[in-house]
Amino acid sequence: GQCRVFCPTGAISIHTNSDKVWKALADPEIRVVAQIAPAVRVAVGDHYGLQKGRSVMGKIVNALHRMGFDEVYDTSFSADLTIMEESAEFLDRIEKGEKLPLLTSCCPAWVKFITDQYQEFIPNLSTCRSPQGMMSAVIKEYFRDPEHAAGKKTIMVSVMPCTAKKAEAVRPNSYTHGEKDTDIVITTTELIRMIDNFGLDFASLDPEACDMPFGFGSGGGVIFGVTGGVTEAVLRRLNPDHSKETMNEIAECGVRGEEGIKEFTVPYKGIDVKVCVASGLANARTVMERVKNGEAEYHLIEIMACRRGCIMGGGQPTRAGDRTKYARAKGLYNADNTMIIKKSDENPLVQELYAGLLKGKEHELLHNEFY
Ligand code: SF4
Image (cartoon, rainbow, N blue to C red):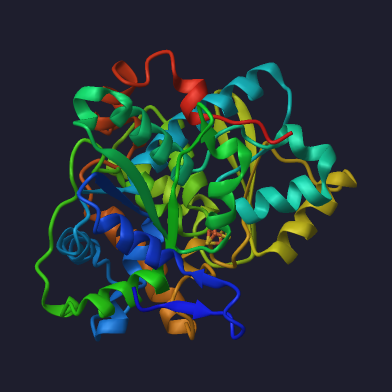
């Protein structure tokens, strides 16, 4: 590794996370597994002169394989798991009329904001782990089986648009059986540096598919990276119909668009479900103050701490102007457009997982408590 920060007195040396990844990659006893978050794929291309915002997921997968990663998986797969669990939780709370509004829990900076500043709303947080957390827990469980482990130790590396994901990975509730689920988190910027250090000509790499059995997410899982995406995926899941018309109707219900606070109502089984989607912590504060003071009432609140969602996360390449912001959101919606499977519950890998590895372990691997 070349990115080492040395203390001038020589007393301490701080190793970057990429150093840890290179070290793991060089060890033949270790299986290094990567997961790539949705927002990452639309923020790498323009660094290499490719079209702004266009998904380069296939090239990233190829790059990671060349660097020596044994398995490369797609976090949009576990975003599907999050949708499954969060939708079920939402319906349960609606039915019982308790712990509403449901607050999304996939953004660690927002979770910290609630647990620090609005403690009375901690029970409202969804108990779902984030897609990063679910993915790592499932993969670690998969490789606990000696047959899958094949004598190797598994190190889970997640590639995230976000520095808060590093804090999430070491949160005590991000552990299963006393073991850390995600071992190393690197940001999109760190990934780009690793690709450059390895000497790859990224632009000319051919696209490659992710590995199985966790390498495929639905369209609903991909749009997680943009504000409103989680809610849109939940609404798809709740709707029994999967026709193109219904998908378009959901897309146009008010969930999309770059406004900082969006409010809309969707009919569901005889009730008007009131939804609020906000991004940016200043907007989050406005929403929570209104809820606290009884000025607004919702069933579901989706908050992303970064304005416009993870596409503008703190670990993404900087200097993103308006064109870039727009292009990244469009890049994710375009990726969704090309997916045959739009709904998380229709992802065959998800169904297989529930029938197999996850059976009886849903709570242990996919949920946590925030208090
Ligand atoms: Fe991280 Fe920002 Fe996404 Fe939250 S919105 S998960 S802080 S990138």
